[in-house]
Length: 256
Image (cartoon, rainbow, N blue to C red; front, side):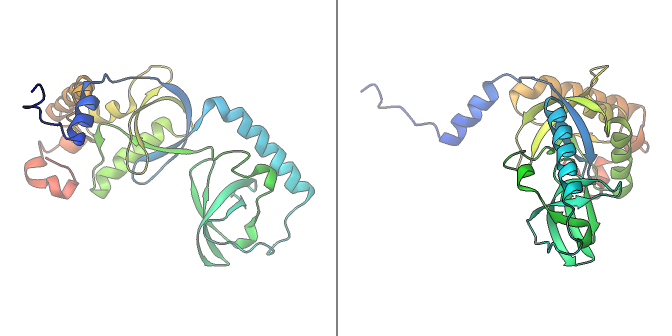
């Protein structure tokens, strides 16, 4: 019988094999980086829809100016979409994340990715014409592919400071590399030079490489590992005392 010696390949292995056989694809799109988080995630807006957001915000603020919310009339509830007056005294769309008291309401600005604690008197009902059904949330969260962020607070702060200085409130090019549990992993390029932002962090010795094993990623992983070896040889930042991984990997939060 033809199939007498056939063994069915487990579904997990079949999926993994397909994933490893495919080629790494790149499709960089222009984005505007609006926020960097304390975990070195970042929020971006799609440049192609940026003009639509600006026009919508102008229209929303005109409507609010014509019909201003009565101070104290809005009672925030966790999960609500609302309008919030930022420190620049302009109104923005937001989501209520936590209500400690009327004086302390934690909000997330859905089109920019930043957070703030404000008094409920600086909040109001989101006009229906500007709901997320009409204008979807404009800020998307991502994180860097191929790098590991140090858990040591000082080392992490150095990496975050570098990223904030280089890319916050600037236009970059973004390519989605693979998915993740909470957001996608991406590579970012500077618009002018096309240099890889994450690779630059590795070259400066500010982060370590996440040496993924997928076959189709080995070319880029090799480039990152070579950059890491150069940073290590030059004793840059994380490597200033040599290769710390043998003794301090747990402290720095890295996998060996």
